[in-house]
Image 1 (spheres, protein in one colour):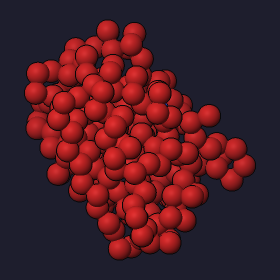
Image 2 (tube, protein in one colour):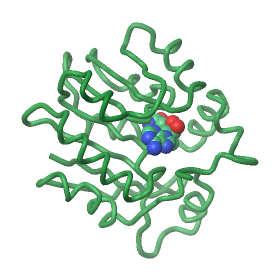
Image 3 (cartoon, helix red, strand yellow):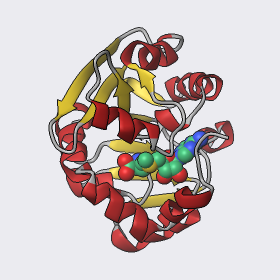
Image 4 (cartoon, helix red, strand yellow):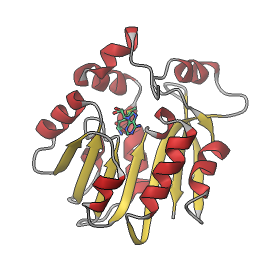
Length: 203
Ligand SMILES: C[S@@+](CC[C@H](N)C(=O)[O-])C[C@H]1O[C@@H](n2cnc3c(N)ncnc32)[C@H](O)[C@@H]1O
């Protein structure tokens, strides 16, 4: 299992509950920083967003040629109604077959997705992503991260995260290193709610 989805976690599969919790956790500000500093998409760029959720990153991006993939059909439905005309939303997992059917991309986004994916699957995903980037293209990721002396409340948020694979910065980098030569990352602490994120670029 890649994420918790039973019991209390099952209510998060509803798009409106998920968005409300994200809002309480200050996700909008985190996404905005991620979009400006890491995604850095220019108008007209081809952008692939894997595990796109309800498509919220689009609120922070210019007019781009956007393709989102998302396994939860409820999130896809919300994304299609909230961002109609801004891109194409595909229900399901991104796969080698899907990659073959698409033109190459300038940017691939994995926003709060890697910590839902076990190592072997993530390593395979990075290998696939390398094949669908334009020359000079990049993969950008954002996730909760484990750090030394973590704020106890940040640790608690990680403990109750649906994603079961929150890692250290080095462990996130190791997933991309097999397929990409240049990996850059930054750990960012947020005061409220206390949380620690890792932003990574792989080229
Ligand atoms: C925390 S949400 C982030 C959603 C969105 N990217 C955002 O930043 O708002 C994690 C998303 O990853 C999706 N997901 C879980 N496992 C996945 C996998 N193996 N491949 C792709 N997406 C996955 C979930 O359905 C969920 O929408």
